[in-house]
Image (cartoon, rainbow over all chains, first blue to last red; front, side, top):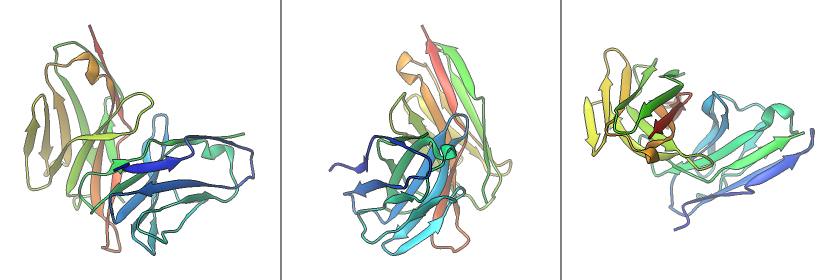
Length: 112
Length: 116
């Protein structure tokens, strides 16, 4: 089992560019989520999904889109990158709510 | 939504001493409280968790206590070792408004440094 795999590990974008952060899990987990980690602010929930075809917003969803067409994949799209989106992004999955969440290795994104 | 406050933001202890990190939460509906450890440059990993129907849980040198009435929970690390140095996050899981899932809200983290 690879667990939760994120790509890329590092990315530099120019303001206004768009891109997709990839997240895949091979544990057949229904629940997947995206967090951003900023110094002094912990991990903040961007979007989450409770299964294929079902997504919902977290606490900081603006500027990000998600979709869940398969159980395995949960990509995060930045529509028009802004310097405020410079952060480390983590994808996580769990087989249910109220149980351990497994994190990917993170994507360090810099928007210049 | 849920709000989780975590203190202290930094903590320095000598090897062998105990460390305590405290968190408070706002939503009485929260029912699951995990603690994650994040080493420098690595992903967060679960070290211990507790559910709302339990007051205390222990795993070797690590313990977590929960006070539902006061809405706070704490992480206790005894006999600290240099490899305990990391950032620790508490979190609280509460049901979403749709009732379909629980959201996990994290505290802002505590940087623990264990000195020799």
